[in-house]
Image (tube, rainbow, N blue to C red; front, side, top):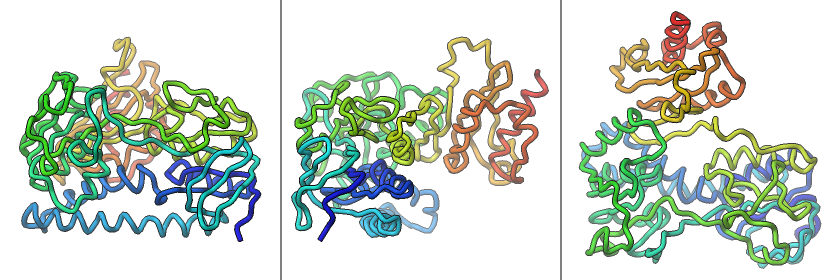
Length: 432
């Protein structure tokens, strides 16, 4: 028989809820996490990880002889995604977290009712909403799951479509364009802006766009589609329209019983992640602060700090992020096109081939490093193979105001692509 009283009840076992549960248990809170589907959410079960897992196949695809064999390997990898559930449950159990599958309903800020074989009415000291978001569509479009689809229907279908139209040249759209064109599917991307991946520097976009075009991907840019027919009149289940970049928050059942304040449809929170309702917190995508899994994870990790009134929300402007295509686009901090006063910065571009590891591997791509004239690191961006594996600490470096001198005083593994940052610091050091 499951206990009926907990210090923390978390609704939703995506990245935010999962890491929130582990963090709360580590702080000594008696914690229950409730999930109505399968643990993982979009970040791990239904979107981000499956896409990246598929794209990883093409980093070493020389042993495959055809798109058909790649497709077989891809579906084998998708089956592995289901095994993440066991990993989730084992980690929660090891941490002392109670897991319950069922449909939760909020009765009050301290009371939850769960419809499941082990459910009932449960009480808590802190209620945490970590229900994430779901794909949605712009006006004039309807996600019917057959012709107009989301990533979820696309990734887990058993056959490949004859053709794939993608609405949205954002990160999600471009990663999926790469994946399915590599699987041999004709792909066309429609984007209302004049360039794909808006918000990224043109020199970062150019190598990836050229690669996609060489794979046969078509682009229709600067085109605002009002309906599916405007994109393609012959859409069907075999020629679907994938809609990307539109999401809406998942509100838990019974949210009207506590009525937290909303902002643009999302649950509004303070810097502690507490909502307008005392003792009720919202973490991850459902609070609308940022739609990336590593932000959700970070909020979950620090959730317990919010219980004691400490600030949890950090500076997301230095957030490291990546586009997991080949080549990747990755970085943290300011981009060159973000600089309001360019004369106050040093911008240096280092080809990967200028590093010894890059030279011997005949790497294309580059690092672009931005320093303030006063010496602090302000941004580092790059395009090339597997750069995301070395970029994560750069957000920390920028947040800690690491300087040119700090970098010059550091020891870099040799030979490694990360020596591109050292090369940039040497070049800036010679200029100042």
